[in-house]
Image (cartoon, rainbow, N blue to C red; front, side, top):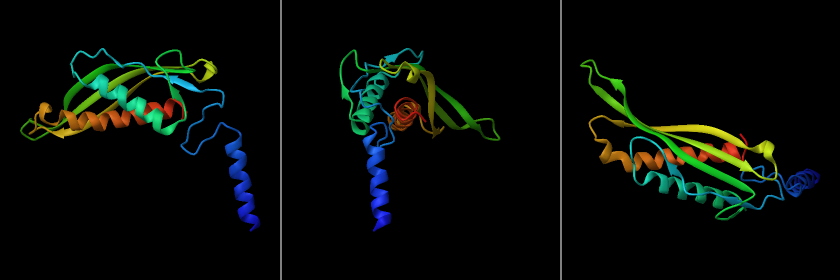
Length: 165
């Protein structure tokens, strides 16, 4: 019984400080809002839905894993993101010098501003990729690959900003 009470007291102490949460975030208790504007698309190769899909995925990730209220502008936290690269290249070549596998890579640059705690600001680029068989055209597999890539990017961005990993 003493062990249980000790564990319960430690959990309450951690939760009461307001900085730690069980989702892994470290958001100060006086930070209440976040703005995540529409992702800008600046890559040379065009994917018409990527910016919108990434915007919605980021907003959804922060909505599900934090208690922050999302506002259109002037949030306590501001996450600006732009797609700077979108490229498909061969990654594996057969003995006949033909591509066996291709890799779709998406690169994004984020500027994360914490207006209340500027020392937590982040200005960083992230890349994520997914491989596909060269017997398939990019057009045929692009949707699924982008979903996978967006999920990886959102995880990395979330961890670098509010989880501070």
